[in-house]
Amino acid sequence: MFKNPKLLLSLGLFFIPVVVFAHDVSSGDQEILNNGGLLSYIWVGAKHMVTGYDHLLFLTGVIFFLKSIKDILKFITVFTIGHSIMLIGATFMKIQVNENIIDAIIGLSVLYKGFENLKGFERCFNVKAPNLFLMVLLFGLIHGMGLSTRLQSFDMGTDQVLLKILSFNLGVELGQITALIPIVLLIRLWKKKSSYQAFYKACNIYLIIAGILLFLYQMAGYYNIL
Image (spheres, helix red, strand yellow):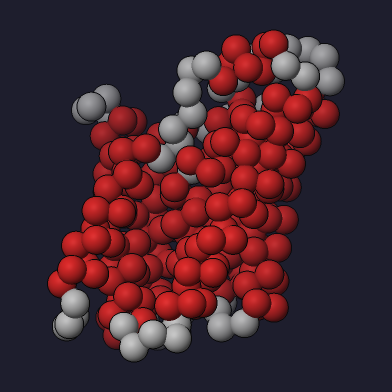
């Protein structure tokens, strides 16, 4: 199916860190938050998004599906609104869910996007894929719950709690923009190459694989298998 095995191998090696380092936020972040002001929450939020491969993989899958910068901005905005609402609301109201379970669902969102991009609904079930706009909003809310779970794992004290949450959220947005710019540029530049279709298929297959591995990894953590 693919004419360039080296491309497949290189992409496979690229996605190895996805499972190993997803949500790789160091234990030193609590010390940063303790010793810094609101800027420290912006920094930790940005760091979390840049190292949050599951969030970025889902957004990469969304970007693959879109053709214009206008559509990319529209769907990224919808995702941002969804995860910001849930991150701010759930954290402020102290709504907690199991970290492994929510991260397992986020892993499934990565699998979903790769499956949808490869027209899996049409080929496997002979039905149209669900409305992308609504699915991006839904997954934005789910990813926001994951971000809230991470923020609530820190001791934020009792002062300026809402401002700390908003600062963390701002950091997440800045990190998201920083991480997505090179991804968008890479995909748009590759679209001009003859190898793009092979690149597209390979990346989405690896999105499916990464999503499955992320799901299994988190469920293993939930059942204390690891």
